[in-house]
Length: 451
View (cartoon, rainbow, N blue to C red):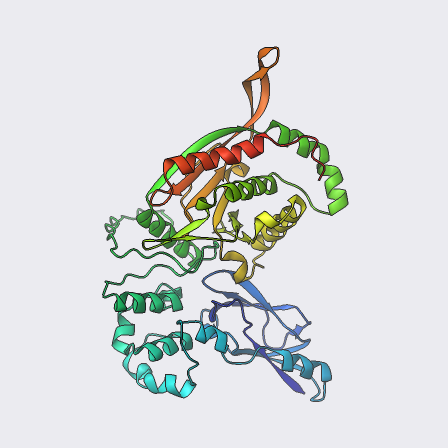
């Protein structure tokens, strides 16, 4: 009987390892091709690993809550006789059992490929001198940069269970060269935040939280991994960016009436339901084209002006957590394209089917708090972006309308837009003009628009 080695697949250029969270198959179970075998978690997303072959599940090589590296063997599947051509073909196409040279070489600019023997030589006493785990990628960077084991042990890791991530060691190297005190920030979280984040030269130490007493009958709920990362990222964002929030009310009567008129025919023709979210995303993309200095990030004293307009949409998960899938190059999509992207990402987000690359590289974030009946809010900026827009609930209100015959009072559909922005680089004038531009695009919607 042939045995197929199931490898941990590549999950994006910046992901080198994952935590095994739950095995979906046990030894002796029958597996069909493309059937999920195991649930895994990275610092970006939770997902499932399907089997590329059909057969019988033989052995689990990694226990739950343990770390597996990209390309490593995590399970054995029995596929049939030794001459099974299909199994052999799939095995040949499987990901090699080592971390790709591209991932390692990309860790540090100008870094050359490092032989495994060199890595092991540089850390031959690691297991003897420390109980802390370091991934091969972290070890390779440390060996290339001459980082000692003692220095590695001093780095405060931001990965799962306090592990040192690629971003942690790169930040340590950067600040070591600048002789600046290093304090790491989370590399990324499953809610779609970018992996390259701004770390201020001087960190403000947060006051310790007061100790709490637990009364009889109180329930203690331990934060899960995603919630811990979200909490860390939100604290970091409030610490590094002075938040300012502007509000504006928009009349979206034409949009409401237009959608009501075309939603049935649109669904029959396109096979997709059209919500208000794609319309909001299209308006934001147009406004960014008009005012590109909203589409920036801050790196120390440098402002990075992004070419691409990649809009993240905050999505609530059944677990109560949050994830932010990203619509890449949203300005290049028409309304049908944006609708397809929104629906696809939202469904796969709720089913833990997103890929790591689909929650990174966002340049602006939109959160629709109106879906919960909220009329307005003050969102926290999704670092390293500089602005986030909250969309409130649409409500019918009496409003004064100017007509050629004079002012009249009519029932209109209105909503509040709330935008928080980073006052280091976005002043009130730009922030106020941008949110007004978004409102203008929404209010100018053509009720006769032919999609």
